[in-house]
Amino acid sequence: MADIAFLLLIFYLVSTTMNVDSGLQRMLPPYIDPSEKQQTNKVNKRNTLLVFVDAHDRLMVQSKLAQVEELNSIVKEFILNPQNRDDMPEKTVEKIDLIGEYPVGKGLVSLQNDRATSYDMYMRVQNELVRAFNELRDELSADKFMGKKFEELGEAEKKAIQKAIPLRISEAEPRDMTGGKK
Amino acid sequence: MKKKGGKTVPAISTSSLPDVIFMLLFFFMTTTVMRETELKVQVQLPEATEVQKLEKKSLVSYIYIGPPTRALAAKWGDSPRIQLNDTFKTKEEILDFIAAERDKVSEADRPYMTVNIKAHKDMRMGLITDVKQELRKANALKISYAAQKALRRGE
Image (tube, rainbow over all chains, first blue to last red; front, side):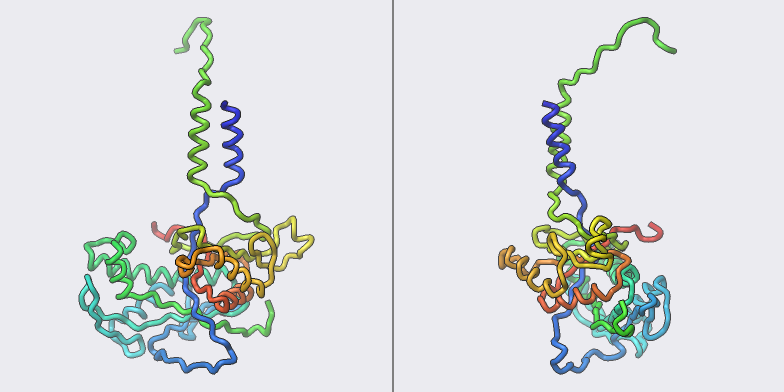
């Protein structure tokens, strides 16, 4: 009896996996045929934060060199625009259920990369961007819903927070500056 | 301290061994999932702290990108390749792959389909960008960059 059970056990150990897939989830923009006329970019310049990673894995934010560690605070400040500076996103006060009136920023983070950028670096930057948004959501939810984290909220509350701080990361069309070198 | 005397210790009863093993067996049967594809490329996932778990495995399609495994490197070389299901494919074949995956699920579930991109962390973005462009053409816009969960600093 024990032998048969052992045999089955070993079979299951070998043929199955336990790992749960996890990853950074993202929506891609719909495909635009390059032959079609490029529609003019309607997003105001002050509303976009340009993040670019070049072929040597250097990070540039608004055409200035930056470190990955700084990215979190840069994005946070950009999205919230606490001092209402006019080179940062405009805000419109919206009435959101459960939260009330909240100035929703129109900020958009545009992430660009080179064909020779390493995937590791790209993921680190992506991760920092998502982290900035997640922390902002955590802060707002702690403020509005008695110290709870965003993950601990119910469905309706989550929706409200998502409305107040929308996750706007765009992965722009790739740039190729290496001349096809891989 | 030691007990003295020549008394022999009785053998441990093994009559409950099958029960224990069966319990282990049932534990593994319920917690694991069957392996579906054999990896032909090396995939060492990058680390990230903000990962989300992918739910509903039946709605997830996998794209593996990386250099061929050592055993296959002799035949295929070591430049990065795309693996769909069990074979190496070119990026043009992603369209067909997505169409086939779409046919497998019911119409109601189609908007929730996710493509999980499992790419080796030392890859260059070139090939991944190509794959992303193909996915956009195939209108499979919901993607997930597979990553290992790492702890946030200071946690």
